[in-house]
Image 1: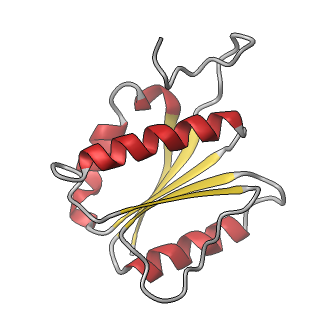
Image 2 (image 1 turned 30 degrees about the vertical axis):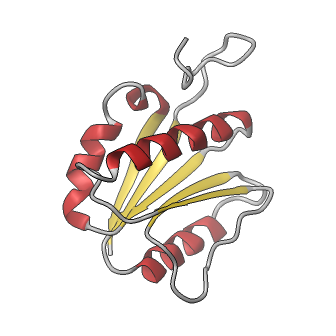
Length: 138
C-alpha cells in the first residue's frame, strides 16, 4: 500500500490538499508572504508550510496547533534537492492528512525551478494528493 494513499480508515477518499507555490525573492520575503496568507485563512483552519532555505533573523512563522512547518536546506529541486524535498513532503503529507489540513504552502528560492517543481508535483503520487491553487512569484 502506498504510504501516501488518499484513503482514510473508513475507506473514504480524502479531498486533495490545496497547494500554493511561492518562489523568488529572499527567505524572509517568502516567509512573510506566507504568514500574511495564513493570517487571512478562516480561524482554526489548519495549514502546512514547506520552506526551502534557512532563516536569517526573525522567523515570521512559528509552528502551533493549526500550523505545521518544515524547513529544508536550499538545493535545486531538479537534481540535488529533490530527495530532501520528497522525503520531507511525504512526511508532511502524512501529518496533513491526519490533521485534516486543507492548505499547503511550498516556498522555493529560485523562481526558475517552479516549472520543474510543478511537473514533479503533478506526477504520482502527488497528482492525487495536491491541487495547485496559486503560483506566487516574488
